[in-house]
Image (cartoon, rainbow, N blue to C red; front, side):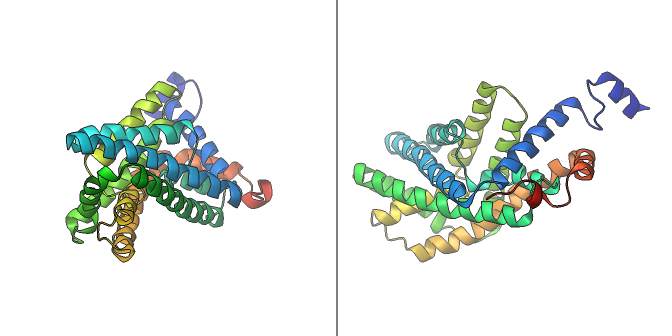
Length: 279
């Protein structure tokens, strides 16, 4: 009786609340659009994503250098995520909820998801590396600040604490994406973006892309960190970012809207590649 009453109260006959129906539609639609991008588009968008996150890192370092306060610097870092949002660029860890939801809804394939993830990850790192080289040439006075920030990550031993920090890093940015999909208000989306940036950078959570840019800047400025040290840190951070984003947020979201996915799958074509070729 309670389910029938909920349907009577809501504006639609969907098996979940109206707000979840709208959020589901937005999530699957945007996820499908990302999955069906060409390789060229993925790479270009990913490079821009690395540049825009680099903008946030630059703001973070500027405030941290002047104040020594990570929380204030975390707010400044939000500039990068706001730029990413407004410019419609792509960050690897943003690609957990929406593209995975599209695959589950049969609006894309696992192959397309792998192409999106791999291309975006490589392009984010390449764009970020270039941007950080320019930043360190422009602001050599930040060398000690970026070195200290980078060593916070590369010198951290692999432990339960660092695993937890990486899981929180992945879940935080995926939750930020979910909050953005939960509203049609651009100001509300920007507020969600600022929250995500503050938590990621202000609390020094382990994030595979954001913190890689800090480490790149330290390497380029001669801080004594090697690319091998970065790679070791990056490998486990990336893994647990994915655990946080896919398990703590994406999987629970899929479970919450399970009825909508089942309905959508029944209506979707058997071969998504045939219906919407990525080129």
